Length: 284
Ligand code: PMP
Image (cartoon, rainbow, N blue to C red):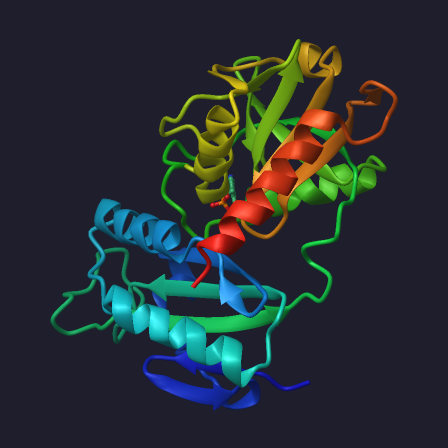
């Protein structure tokens, strides 16, 4: 089915949407992105994504070409025009397409950023719980993982390494500690405590992470923000990950070691319930 997508102010059938070969997103991965999920035809945590987008752009000295209100309108129109009930909206902003390939950033007065948005339809998203097996791989990404750039080759390779090993995803490990998943934040549960790495430039500051930790604390669950090892994860009672497109998802195997009885655990299951219920209340 052909989608209606958004490119630089225009709504177009996907086949008619075109970007210059000189676009710095294409040539240098000089761009940032956000993924916002849609449930019941509404956007989950739009505000959180808009705030993080602004921060990513600031960190890269990239002008913000679109106001938050306009961005919300584009999101809503794409959701409506494409009949999305459950799915997601992908947004990408790059530094635009200067006249030539050049490492030096173009003058923002002459080169406008490129703004692209499209939807992905995912019926059944809220009900989908796929217990995941992870392997560990070395985290060799750059040092500013808190900026949500489109530089995703290594995470993509991590996923392929996982598939080749008969697993579903990879947890990235640096100096002996898990940083995060290839496209999600990583957690373990031990003796009722929810343990996840503290925020820094080492990981993406997940919008889902922020919400889940807030809901966990509100529900009187104990949250400990500290790094953990793969050995700790293998000995944990439960493990899970969070992301805007998967919400809260169980991890049942870590480097070949099964966790508990191999089924999604009660803490993760409860957190997923609370997250979906509370996020839907505030969806726009
Ligand atoms: N870490 C990484 C590396 C990611 O790519 C993502 C999702 N894009 C996340 C964490 C989760 O962030 P969010 O909850 O905002 O989707």
